[in-house]
Length: 292
Image 1 (tube, one colour):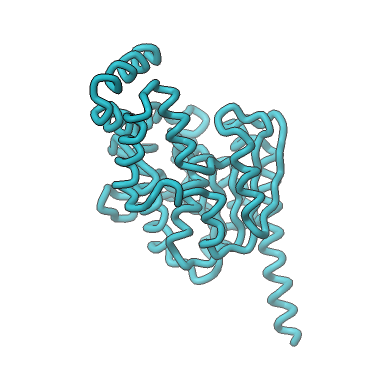
Image 2 (image 1 turned 45 degrees about the vertical axis):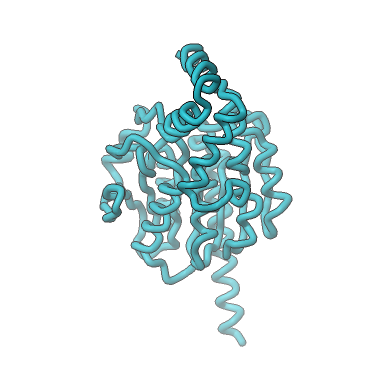
């Protein structure tokens, strides 16, 4: 199948770069593997479900834990779903957190066929605005979900306590460059692909770099966790972000993989520890303030 796709796009980009670029962009927006894994299915039976109205379609949301606990949003990655974050979510609920998960457009049980970072950014902001948190909240995100989180938070004034990125891409420009090489389109078709993306985003692709978005986000701390040998997203993405974001911490792990890390007990413990630390720090500050 991949050979056929590459052969087609090589020929198409030679004959009509504009058409090939447009078609490549349409393909890029389509999650090709939306399968819900067997170990994820049980989550949908235990979580409380609710929907949020949105112009794209109703947003499928899931709730765990104590509604009065510290709010934590979990944002899944590309070709995944809310339940991919369930091992982390269930453990956070056990620890007394109020956990909200949701499916991005064209993921999970969504009927949409395509998604992009703009659509996903809008959905995350809709979830935040619907919940309307009155106190700083935290977000744990995975892979593409980390880019969505960064982009969304750069467009809002909400105060975030802890951010935890379980791998993350950095530059959309680099993603499109790699994608164009992967499917075999030429430079003219690649430029058309980027033009289509910028027309949708209403801003230059170069302006959407996670390492630069940190300056626009109100947050207390960022923890970056990445497998040093991640085969999907190289660790260089996370290192670039770590070097630019103030109040950030980097943990490079071994043998946790890209998706497998969401079920890794060591990773889950790091997430719990970081969120518990942030919660404890706020309590200590509150006690200190009361004393004076």
